[in-house]
Image 1 (spheres, one colour):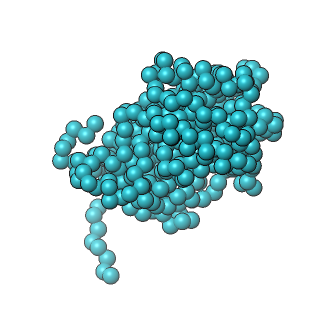
Image 2 (cartoon, helix red, strand yellow; image 1 turned 45 degrees about the horizontal axis):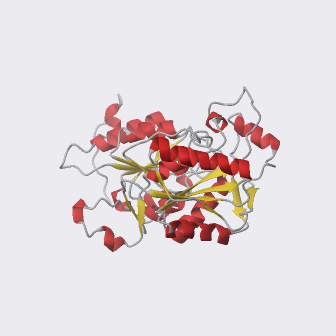
Image 3 (tube, one colour; image 1 turned 60 degrees about the vertical axis):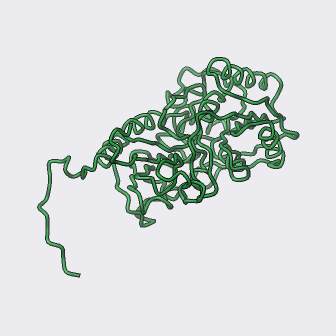
Length: 361
């Protein structure tokens, strides 16, 4: 996309935190249209699985980097680089708690990804103990969770890496006893995803410990048919597994470079991305406390989207982050296009005040 060799590529980060009830991006891949639109006006988009994952649905974006949340935070802080790849070999880790029939559904999804999409997977690994996923809800309404056997998860991931994997897809058995009202609200396009916070804990653990791309898909029994399901949640109603989008995303996820000096050996021709190359970051206006924005918000254009309400109430002003507030993602896309073109946004409006003398110090 960078047709002008005198201009460096324009890089934007799109963050929609998981498990906080985001009006856009809090459901089943419903922020993917936002990612598609932003990707069309930037050279490189860096985003994370919560934005890109839509269960059976996904959309390949050649200029998008699919980066797990912990890895994205490390990148934003300047500690890790992102090295694009042509292909990853994915190791599939299945929770020992998954019942036989449900396990077969996930294995068939993996085989379908190999045969129909041409993805490269190692043989799968089953954890040596049930992972024991537990779901929690914070006072704000945001969700989180724990696993009782993180050691079993890491041993399984290490076995997959030893077999040649350089990215890890995890399928953990999630509890079926989710609060009925909370689940119904989610299916109707309201409230907070009861699973999302725990999913983030699982992928964070693998990425933090093993420094490889990772994403998670929950294993659940199919829910009864409900003709009133919201379009925002409908992607999760299409099959027995949420694994396809995870495998598609991981297949081209950039590798993490944890030694900064190595990233500069190629000079200007090095494809590795570092935080100082980020031009803009887009976040919900009420969810500005995330690590990525705290790292990038003072040196990149920070765009806070007011229409994407969440269960949180952390504004950019409360943290003294010099963000530009916009009403919607439509406006955010326009602001990114103007920023990339070097056009001051005010020049696109009917009002242009006269230039003023600089006041004395």
